[in-house]
Length: 110
Length: 113
Image 1: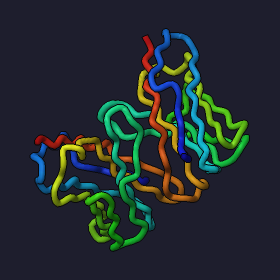
Image 2: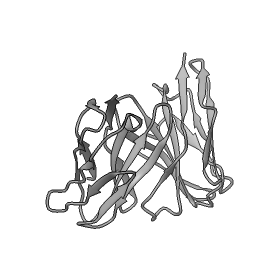
Image 3: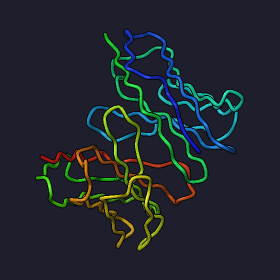
Image 4: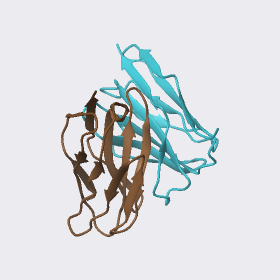
């Protein structure tokens, strides 16, 4: 079946540090891949997406590349800010089956 | 502004009572979804609807019911049969069932006392 595994948190970084949150997936065929962000007490916001192998999604300084050979979609940001503190969810959609990872909580300290 | 609204943001109910959570969208999306989020877990699909007057069970439909009488609205009822209803409930929509991107509302936190 379809599934997503992402690195466990929490992740705590200092401002301007480099961020990587690992995400791997299991799926047959060619799923679309997503990163969503959830700020405290709010719903999920779409951060970025990629729909085919080698595509790079990017938004607000965050990037993730669809790697079919390693079935991965790792989230990266070169310099995090305090305002990036949130829970990040990796997700896939494969033939209308949407699956989410457990979420990774990121805290950025000044 | 187009978007998805959920109300109320916080809801408290006594055990054994049914409760209905509201979800409205003005995005003209055909498909709508309800998810449940528990601490430290990903989202789990409760029900989804691809069109008015049609809905399907998701992975954890037991103890829940939905209706889709209007395109804009997809209310979720948490019944007394749901054994552990305290959770954060998220509504989402997409242009169609086959469109890969879902957009989420702000959520309703339900606490059963």
